[in-house]
Image (cartoon, rainbow, N blue to C red; front, side, top):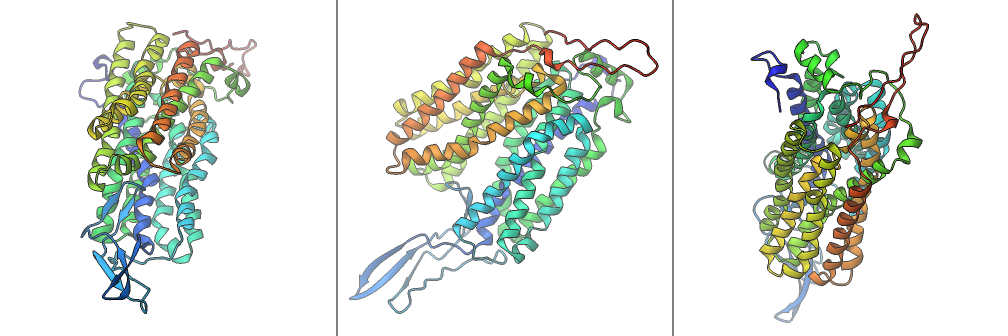
Length: 518
């Protein structure tokens, strides 16, 4: 990633530090996003799973079946904890109330399933609220403060959740909404950081850090939250993520500045190298994006579809793969938890691999940027679609089925050099705004994908019903890939240009910044 000639020997390139901080920011952001689904099960009164009425010696009894696991384990069917109860308990007609033994993880609250769903969903409503304005705010006021304060304020709110729980469930809902509002600023702003700090030939690996950090945050948070809850209590499952969020915010302010020109300790050699790598595609003048031209740009509209398809597949597997592996393929929960993590691990590592390949091809100028973006949709969109089409017909063996899912998301890791980085190509000056709009629309897949599964599986829950879900998802992948291949582009668009304002002392206006065609 680092070219030796552009830095002083022995010095750590500042853009490498910025890239590492991008990875850490995404890891911490996803920790704040997903840890509540684990913590909530330790905060509420457990729900009895089911009762069986039988007769013993002529006396009607009620048998309540509960789990007998001695430790906290992850229920991957809904992303929650399985709490340890006694194996089986009985009561007679005079004792209808069966009370399972519940471990003491801290105070418990009588919140209904509806209230719990509002708690989990509040984050995403807040997230949608700031996804759109975050990009323009970062471009106008700089990314350092927007991201730094987002993590610091999120840390304060997260640390207050035990107090919110004592007040009322509505306080918890409001807190999760606020965390979503703050977190919605992170990802569009990170793309602004990349547009200012990372040379074009190194951007794919930086974007891979966004994808990889998000995946890593998901993979480690569930078991981490479970261990904290089991050994220290659920309050620490809030305090520790709050501490991590605060540390990320502090270190971000310490190590990252808005641009190389504003960094206090960067070498002149590296600053000049970064700035010269952009040519005149990135302007130092702050301006509002030309939204009318953006929303009527065929390359950008094609990018929106490609990005939506990629996020549809990702959100579909995030929310539904554990359910499918457990309920349809019949794997035990412990095995399903492990198998469900494999596709995300595959996607994380393949994202870094494809990012390296993309940067290498750009550096050696073996193909144009447009050809690079379009050709690799074979991996990011067409191959995942092909695996999903084949899955219901060839995957009667559970291991083969899981392998198809792993291959699907693994190849989708190529999105780090297709849809995830293409906004940087089209408009470096407005990359944050573009990604904010893309991310806003793509987030809706998190709601729609589960609704699709529920529609087809409301009567039966077998491979025959899931076949239609897989085929529709495959169609979304392939159709969007075709549209992107036809209308997509890797060239800087004319609407990226920002006209410089004439200086007061100059009698003639400064000419417009011209875009370099890649």
